[in-house]
Image 1: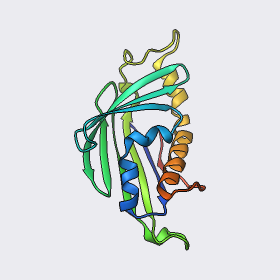
Image 2 (image 1 turned 180 degrees about the vertical axis):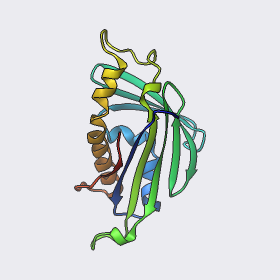
Image 3 (image 1 turned 60 degrees about the vertical axis):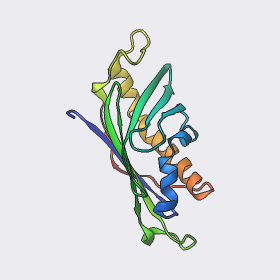
Image 4 (image 1 turned 45 degrees about the horizontal axis):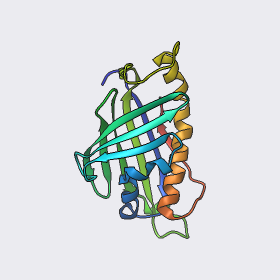
Amino acid sequence: MSDVDRILLSTLAHRSPEEVFPHVRSFADYPRYTDHLKEVRINGDGDVGSVYDLTLTWWKLSYTARSKVIDITPPHSLEWRLVNDIDARGEWRVEPEPESAPADAPTASRIYFDAIYNPYSANTNAIALPRFVSLDWVIDKVEPKLLAEAETVVERLVADIEGQRRNVELTVHEMP
């Protein structure tokens, strides 16, 4: 990949990796975590080789990303890559971090979301852009919104994992 951007974020969940990983792995639940993911369709059993169609909407745009599970190492890692229209790959990673658990939690894990992508590799024919709207304009508008969207996803994911909402801290390790 040349001219790539990377998003690397993490947060702490007050649960063990074994309790966290099923939530990270459950792509079908992801529409609950974000306002822009409208539908998830799966072709496969959720294991390596399964393909997920993720229908995203924003502004006047709608797009279905096709993501393939490349590797799974429970309860620590799930690697994926997009197989249509844009050069992108990434990983959900869960690492034990018991020393960061608050007094009222028996343990904790750090959840990492890592995505590497080339925004300019997008197939412009795959996205029906409104008249007079360029892909560059869309990229310039979307990239700043990624952090806010990531915060929403992480907060809702942690609420699912822990069974209640709380303020979560999102650590940004790398952003475009």
